[in-house]
Length: 473
Figure 1 (cartoon, rainbow, N blue to C red):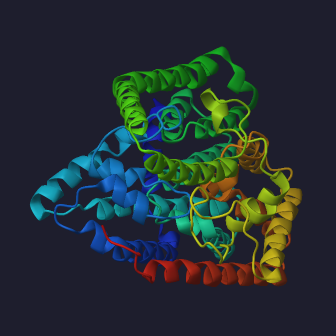
Figure 2 (cartoon, helix red, strand yellow):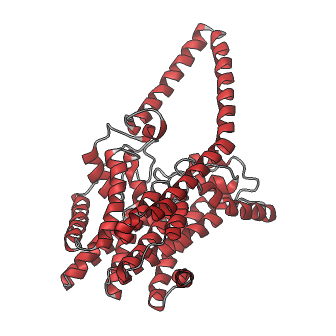
Figure 3 (cartoon, rainbow, N blue to C red):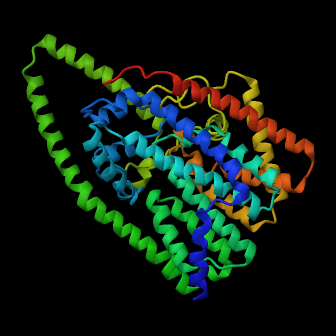
């Protein structure tokens, strides 16, 4: 009974504490301002009465790096829009927003998807700030000023700042992961157990948003409970049962919503191919020559896109998303620790699968110096925090991401868009350096670094948001 009372008491984690109010208000104002600018940029497109061809509009007009506008699509016209085996619950999580949007569209006659998705992003981004601050303040035990500095430092990173406005699942994932790490850190600090039902619920929800995040919940259970993690009861109820339930959900979802559409598309594709073959057969020599030239140009574009995605290990199952040909070293310094932390000025926010090359060099040597400094602070923080079990939990979560991206090559051609899943580990590690070396010069260095990144990334992002879209459908 005491555990149940304590668990209900922990629901107060969403209550903003007095010392968090003023700084979190500033963070909230920045988050709202960025979302307002994005709504302003896309307003003319979305506010057209009778706005209909959603996917066409989103695909052609909504270019935010490699992020997919699937959340906009699902809230505008609900369906299972995400890949079910990678995001098993996400379509159902956005269903309430679709229901609200249906009512608002009926009342106002326009698609209100941007406002509803922005509300979700603002909530998740705001509490990501809160929980990251609490990790620095309560778990690592920094002073209030230092905890604020390290949290602001994290939000100065390009793709943490970017996550505030992108209508994809990454902001939701970051929010859930930071909750998990915060709870784990408090449990480690106070000697509490990670209860099996807490782990099961966190896994089902967190992995339901992005399957790979579920591993991080299991890692949290291990680092908190240590040897007790391997007890049969905990393994059965906290690991095997929720994993089986989530996998069963994904299979049911695929067979109910996805498979029928795949069969219909395959039949339609076969009919179109047969009709095309008949049409080609009836062409004159001149018409066939023009057709072959047009097809050749299209094939060149497809080959160029395929080259950017790299060579997979196999062409089936999860292995079709791997990549064994893209350079790991160049990906590390240009994209992983490059674009994730500092935007590249060239090909700004363009999609790798459209126009952006896989690797874009910085214009300034200073950018590589900033990147090097950020990584050195991170490495130094690991050394000074090497005895912290919580830091090793955070590093193990980041190491799993590095395994799927750098070893398996999943999403390596656009690895920076996955930054909200792991990038917060850099300031968490750096916080141990700041805690150990309490020297004003180190605070000055981190403050100047954060200010530079805020100004540099903020200018490029706001300049983009204030520029009009090229066309309106």
